[in-house]
Length: 565
Image 1 (tube, rainbow, N blue to C red):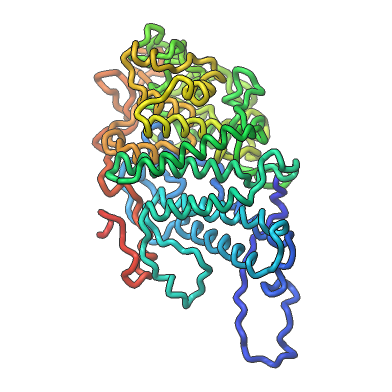
Image 2 (image 1 turned 45 degrees about the vertical axis):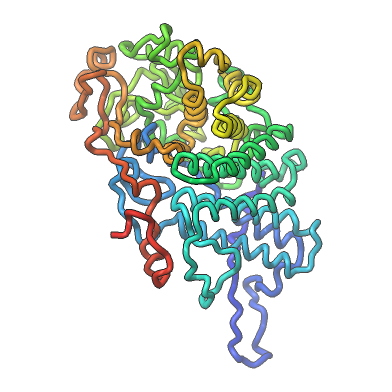
């Protein structure tokens, strides 16, 4: 893995002539000057190490901004630093870390590319590090474009006098095209995963560049298809081609080392370095780089699932719970987990199951819904708890987690391929289902998805493809972006956030009254956030640009629609 302790936070120095006596123009003795750097391949590698700090870090609560999970206090956006994103009450901020950090890395990646050209070093010395720079420039533009839409496209190193500081926004599709171009450049220069040495695991590979290319292609293709664009087919072709290349490479496979529990263990320490992970952020107790995700999930309930997410999991016969005779209802503590897709109990903490606590292994008896804040080791705002991302060791429960969010993984790429094929052709063959969605289902022993099954059961293939994506990628930060690109956010996001069925169930008999939370009279579920407290307006399709950046642009940077006042 990357030795994080030795990664430099590389700062570029401006060289200013002061008109001093030449005898006093000495190289600084306590730091490396820019003029004396960029001489060897190792110099470029050290500079590239800094780019990895821009990967998403743990804990990641991005899905708190959607309908499938909610925070145990205010809804906090991981990538947009203010409250109220989930319920639509957030306001434009003067500055955001997302904007500032993305452009910081865009500048540093561009600077490395410039210095590689100027160095005179051969490709075998600098080509790989150029590839990493191209990838991370694309990655940071990707983070910007999916949040803000069009943003200024800067592909040169700027200083304080550069007129390009006042660039207008490029369109969303222009930024996507720039991302795809950078990724093509990266793919040509990066190694395969199989070419990495043990110490290099965690570095960017061709597979990572192709995975991001597939992700960006699907996003833009479906955005244009459902949001009045005109080039959907072009980008869907990009997604299909890139995802096919990942699959055909033979470099990746789903993690199955833990048998029936493999899906759970993929996301914690046991899954580190597996061949399903295409790229993730690295953590290490030995290198003193750790995080506290397990404790925040298990003790603080900082992210808890909703009824919307619980209802997505199929019964074990492959049918939705509204159609399956196997669905056992919600009246007993664990009945809704019975006869369900195993990923439900591997992602939620089911009543009666074992979970790892501050006191070691214990039986989870079920939780009391709470109105917010830290509700202790049992409660949550919805009565559900998350198991996914929760480590199972004393290190994990004591601030020393060593696993990171799986930024790109093979299962996502297979899901991209299935969705892009269907969106492109309005159909998908059983053969393509077998090499995409059914590979994923096989890991958890779920029935195969076929065209005949969908037809005979009155299902909709596109809905089932989307369901599979939502279930497999639950809590990994995709949900709000998916709803926006499908143009479903305005319909789904304003709905009430609901939790467990409570009235007349074993929950009520065991835990008694639930305080100031209300009960939905239709289905007796706890209402953590009523529909009257939620909204999704047209302006919420994009985040507002940082106000200070708009002000500094001298009128060239136009605020996103609906956020002008």
